[in-house]
Length: 511
Image: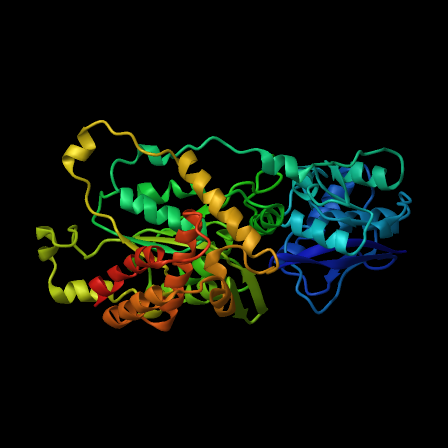
């Protein structure tokens, strides 16, 4: 007898429908899985046979064929175990499963018949709603994650037997319901506070400007000056995620299997800090079957690259596309995939291979050739895509010893939120622009008009600093953010001067 159960598979960060057809017929005892299955799917027949028998059902004696359609797309992972087992139950007339067409079913099976969690539950739930399915049957550990999708009933199951009895109408399961807006309203206490940082007031100001406009920032200073300490406090002043941003971010983390069973969605902006030994594929995404990398896991959050010149030159160069477009496209033999990668880059580095700062005697320990080779690991095109460059000098001993009172992250965050609200209202009619850093040429022309004095100042800065056209746009974007923080409607020479100051260090160091 033939049975059909609807399921889904994840491709990239999205899901697509998969029809699991099961045919049980007399003949030679053999089980066949077709439809471009990978190794995990091929092995599923062994799990399914044992789980069916251990769930008080009977695996048919004869020829059993599983077909996963569409047959021209490779199927990965163990999420087809549960629909395959349910197909066996109904194809062998052991239970009459009703309304199978109304549900999508996903889940990995243990040999006992227990249902284990799968990756990409949120993406599957969003796709099920798009296909106008009545409900989604999935492991209980994934229920909270999928239940944030409004307009779809999510039914958690713990075992194959429970899923079969539910579809047969013998037991009832209440759908899980979660209001995502309530989860987003919860804000954890700030663990790392800027009030703990002694000195470096000008660096804190640069970081405030960067977060307020979503700008990339590069901190250059000797070891021990507080670069990493400052970077780790950035999430505490970032604006909260909107619902759309939270869903996009959660979907990526779900596909990578980074959500815990208790975590319904990502509610804080991600902060990713990969080690400098990371590979190109680990940073940008890839492997044989394209999957998200660190730049995508940092979507709508912060990507912190400490010791920037220590990263592979090839890994740094592949950052240029996501920094410019907010997406990353990966082409492999398995296909081409585009992942979202709209993040704020925060980078830190020493000014030389030694441990000294600018003008420091220790800087002389490295030869001019060694310093040049070290700095040239950061290419000009990548440097131009970093809006703000700021020096982080070593903190003086008396600053460390004496008591200090500094602004808290809550105070800085209040100003950031006020500036972001101004930008939200400004870009209300532009769907793809959320902050000043995302402005295009037309937006810059419309929202950053300059008076005569400001134009003269900018022209002089471009000539003396020999800045590129891309740096010109970056200066205007940063000056717009500085004006927003000041509550000014127009950008004046004061705002422009501060923005130019954040571009002088690259020419001072790289020459």
